[in-house]
Image 1 (tube, one colour):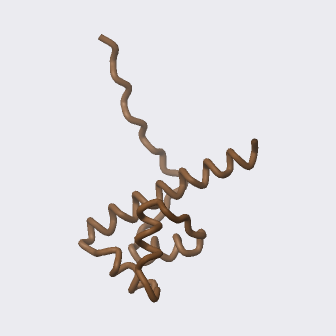
Image 2 (cartoon, helix red, strand yellow):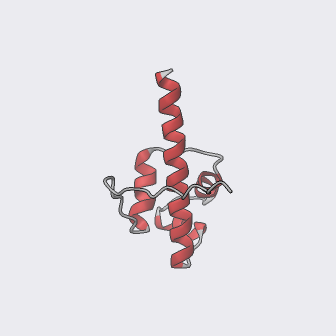
Length: 88
């Protein structure tokens, strides 16, 4: 039970990081290939697979991507929840 909960949390975090990385690449006008070059990877395949959701990476590799893109994490920031639809 605890292991399953931890796995779910890791999957949610990976999804959050993927979204942030994709959005920042787009905002900066950079490509996944560019990101792989900045990380000195021999192939961009790792980046492609991670951002597609086919692969999960270690925290250190994710941290490197966030650093290259200058994405700062604010663990105390509150995430706004979408407003609930009113019943008619």
